[in-house]
Image 1 (tube, protein in one colour):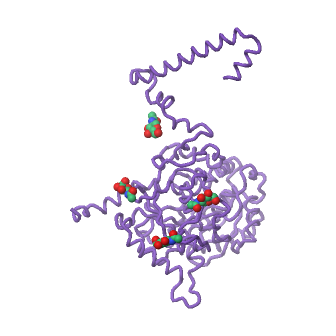
Image 2 (cartoon, protein in one colour):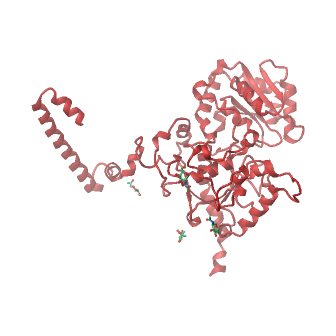
Image 3 (tube, protein in one colour):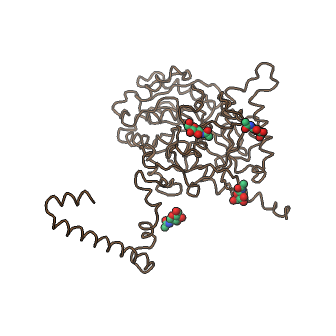
Length: 486
Ligand SMILES: *[C@@H]1O[C@H](CO)[C@@H](O)[C@H](O)[C@H]1NC(C)=O
Ligand SMILES: *[C@@H]1O[C@H](CO)[C@@H](O)[C@H](O)[C@H]1NC(C)=O
Ligand SMILES: *[C@@H]1O[C@H](CO)[C@@H](O)[C@H](O)[C@H]1NC(C)=O
Ligand SMILES: *[C@@H]1O[C@H](CO)[C@@H](O)[C@H](O)[C@H]1NC(C)=O
């Protein structure tokens, strides 16, 4: 305003006076009309709520970049979610520079047990000060790192825990879907911070003079701990969230803690009573190959290879199909089909192979899921899913048929079927899936700090969508408890 006035005054003084009078007058008009609008309330043409939003509510300013306030709420219930979620790939961090999240706006309030470090960061070799349970997460480069290599596939436990810790740190900018509360009565869900996958990967073998493995010991102690907690007794564990992403993690404790919600890779090694799609959350693997930036992603014509598969060979159960497909595809010249698990040094080679292929096969192995699907998404290679029992992360809000091709195992092994199908998917149709892959890739990224609609944020949102059914189950269990107490 001031800038405009002075530039006018350079030309002549009289018009500038006139102008300032006009401005003062119009401001007066504006303010008085706004005031009268809010007084008229229901009688006015503009709904009162709109006026309140403009005039009275400072929170509404938060939609402006750089303003202090909350990020727009996670689009959890909105039916337009399918498209809105695409913001995950854009850099939205600059739009929410808020210092703290308002717990009344969070979609999920999480209470986290202060388990001793040997259950979590102690497994990473972290040693805190006396009585220190958690590392200080305010400086990114001082956070204990998770072991690399294949361990990382199952590191969801680590990213979720870090995000809850960050919820208490003012200088970390993160989405506000989930917020940590320190009073369990205020919580929607109780988080159990046990790094069960790392415990399995690192400590499931008996070492030295141990009678039982560290992994088993920790699980037994966890069961004992939980059974003694008022939070567990209150809900029978139904509102507890336990991360057991590695298919072999929590082997000892899973039945005893089966009433809790699990965060899993799939249900392959669980009975349906212990784990099922109603109660539990499927989380992505952390992909092994580096993400290809959307701008660098090769398009249809820039991908000379039709089909890519690299993986271990399995000769039992659902894994038989890999061998069958190998004999069907091995002589095709635009197909890369090779056995051998992707070791650390082979990862960049796999990344190159996948990002120059149109389709990447995701074939059932010894478990229905594998990180290969997430490698394909990270390289925008259209996944071809040949795994009848697979469970997919966030499928209640994502339609995988938009960016994947599903083939029944019984069809895939018919001679000529698979290649006919894939060769029949022409450029235009493929490009549609590719565009969708670029849009949804961000949902499968684990990172610290978490970003809106990334893997961590999506897991919290999924848990929050289960809140109602969890509460229903808790209340059903409580039906007759009230009588006993009174
Ligand atoms: C205004 O903001 C408060 C929180 O600061 C909120 O409770 C209220 O619902 C908001 N009112 C409107 C009209 O948005
Ligand atoms: C650690 O905790 C114990 C038990 O609560 C307490 O007695 C002790 O003073 C604490 N030590 C320090 C250094 O805070
Ligand atoms: C965590 O580290 C930051 C930066 O080094 C420091 O300012 C803060 O006081 C630390 N917090 C705690 C609880 O020690
Ligand atoms: C925790 O929250 C409950 C319910 O809001 C309240 O009654 C209780 O006093 C709180 N406890 C503490 C220690 O603040």
